[in-house]
Image (cartoon, rainbow, N blue to C red; front, side, top):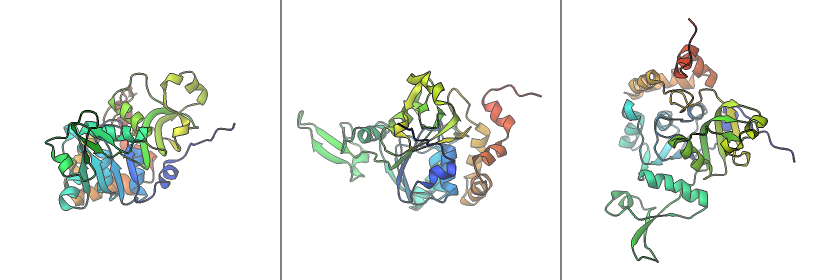
Amino acid sequence: MKRTIKLASLKEAVSHISDGERIAMGGFAIYQRPMALAAELVRQKKRRLTLVGIVNGIEADLLIGGGVLCAIETSYVGLERFGLARNFRRAVESGALKAVDYPELIAWDRFRASQEGLPFWPCTFLGGSGVAANNPQIVPFTCPVTARQMWAVPPARPDVVLVHAPLGDEYGNVAFHHRKMLPQSADITLTRSCDRVIVSVEKIVSSQELRRQPHLVEIPAFRTTHIVEAPFGAHPTSVPGLYDCDDAAFRAYVAASATPQSFAQWLRQHVTDVVDHQAWLDQAGSRRLLALRNVEIPQ
């Protein structure tokens, strides 16, 4: 049986996402975010998307500032040690963005519900919380076994999942490092919750290389619709084990997002007027990127 080659460009992969769809983006907080894919969503002027997540960061703030999102369902949007996600805050305060809050664990469980094909996820610990009171999609019910009060939480139901990973082959098999951390675990859960999965990877390798280490393949080819080679595709966030977070780029982003006007200028300079991901990397510069890898730079 002939296998399907799923290798695509960023532009081609993102073109298959339609306005109004529900998307999920991999990574966690400021780690291993699919930033090359996020930037391409902005370049292609996607609109009225709903982002459903667990703990979101700069990728969500970028999409909000770029006018891509109309709603977000998550437990948190922020930049951790770099401060507030200001585009997110402004959009929610102005009413331009609908934000639906879920506790972090329940936000994760929503993807598990989608993975298992469940109509809801049962929860026992929302009593006394305003989360259930302010979300009509969370339905209280009485447990038929214990007679305790429980809540039925809706599944995540993403139409498309986008993640960034270390390695993959042209057929869409995706490998993670042996030592997985929280961002990688989140990615694996997300990709099992949806039939459409777009993956950017640091490097495309041969399928023979992946067959030598089959235990590292956590996203098999039958789950992926497109795979894209995008070195430093998570920049300025980190990929644990490969490169560090670009602190200087984060600080510049935070400064630029202080006002809508300064952010619009940053967006033009770094995203909308930049032809592709390679041009993004060219702006950062090879010396800076190699320093994030802790690679010795020739003088």
